[in-house]
Image (tube, rainbow, N blue to C red; front, top):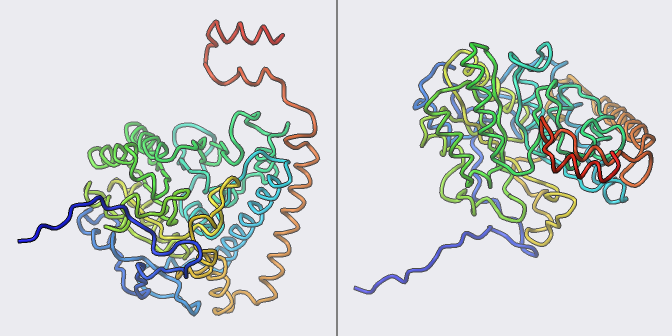
Length: 417
């Protein structure tokens, strides 16, 4: 018998630059296919939802299925506004970097529904920072959480500009925000670290008998990291009130999702292996994202344990201001993405059901643009990376140690501080 040649398998994306986009690997089920289990269902009774896809918005703007969150018109309009403001604000961040006014920028173009829907579904309105506060442990692409939770847009912009208005005093890379009073923990640029932090936060809340939720975020590429699996082990064993979000936007910098194992199974199925309740959701469907997060949130607060959610979406923009996606994927890939654009889809729904007209949408977009323009102008007036009052070098030595060690004190004194 002839022997089969043994060779190393290196996954390849379906299309490279210069080729036609190919998303034939993605199956889009009808909106009524994914069932909705009870929040107290055993984790094993959710495993079929790791390969299904929770959808509410149909292609024609109508809604259907078992996951309709039945949001009122005002809430839907607010969600649309949050997504529009997030997109316009991040466009300005990228522009500021190109102008040399900021050192770095990132955007969630095409993914705005992920952060906004999750933020609206998890209640972080708690009096002050400390025990009893729900907490998101986000990545650099969840700035929409801050927008949806009504954080100051000027303060967000000052952080990107690294000016005197930056609450972090230049100690963080631009867009790595830290706003704990908005339920938004300090961002780490290395992904998957957020998950063990979120699970630890949830465990601490459970120990104190506080009905809080720890919400962790990571990309699909970082599911190959040890931190991801450590978080799932602790979640499986201790059943804390945690939500583990895997944003599958198809690309981890320049490595497509197959390098992390996405061609062999869905990323949601990794929760199955650990005995964790698991959902897979259309990440460009704001209503589906809201419904899935609300289900996981209610499940966690009711003492039924953690949930892993895979968000199927697409990174339409570059990974960051230092990335050129034309080097590794077709130029028209984002336009060919089968799940469409999240803002367009919610807009179509609101128009179809008569809650907004096209003119209403244009007016909302115009108002949002004026808001963002005014925000950037106000932040720039404080200063930019290369203009305005500079921060004192002494800031380098603060917030590093609770008690500064002798060598740092000596270095600070050498600078005259």
